[in-house]
Image (tube, rainbow, N blue to C red; front, side):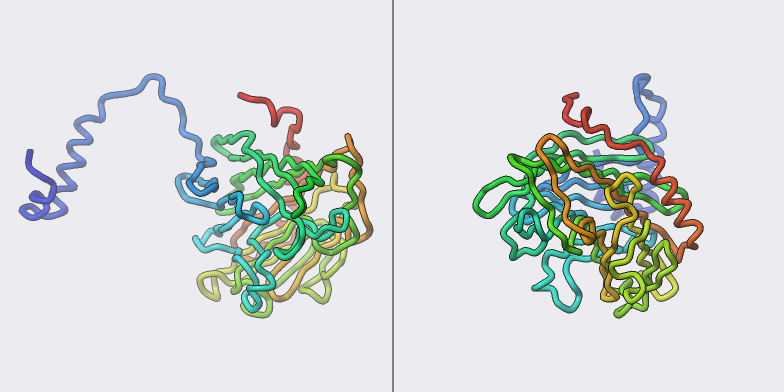
Length: 330
């Protein structure tokens, strides 16, 4: 058999590829009668404790859950232009903001223990993957985590489901479902603006660094008008790739979350988050789990307010996580 390298040398690349395609075409008559449709959206396990969410073979985001981490997180979050709309850490203060892990779940006061900063006395430890699912429209991962102190005491048992769903056109959606259970006795989430969802935007999207813009459902614009205000949603959009290519992420609160519409913590330096207990503490009693749902709408352009509202309404109508079924083995 003549080697491919020799063919390239003697005939050139075009002829070689033509021959290869011709060979493939000659074999194309063989079929698999039992072949099933390939899911368009897939959750693909990777080395080093990662799961890649891909649509048509292109990565949208990646879930990181290694045992050495202080908390699981999503990074990158790929926008329509192919660039990440989030980053790891503050662009001007990366050391003290090392806990800004793109998109993450955490809280600054769990029975007085901070799970928010990397210097806190608590961390969210991955226990196991319950299941991975994918189909033509969406893919998901369900996991179990422990909120544990440095002394090894588990305060909360968490079940988390992260779902990536295709939208219309270039847009897509992340749905984060959380179930928090008191591990032993009642646990109090203290009053704080930090927690439970944080999003660190890419530097170019920030108001200060890139000339981006923050908007909420109540008509507020940027930090001065939105910080610690109640809203159904907050959108952070700005330039990506070049100054004419605008993309963004909208953080959705859900009507079933306690205290809806919730408070939002935003900064012109490029971050936004939901503040579940800004209005006051919340106790989680044994046998009475706290269930939360948030959405991240990843979009192209400076989406009109009416369109964002429409996406939020679509998000609120989506089927809820079926907690009783998540732990069933398949």
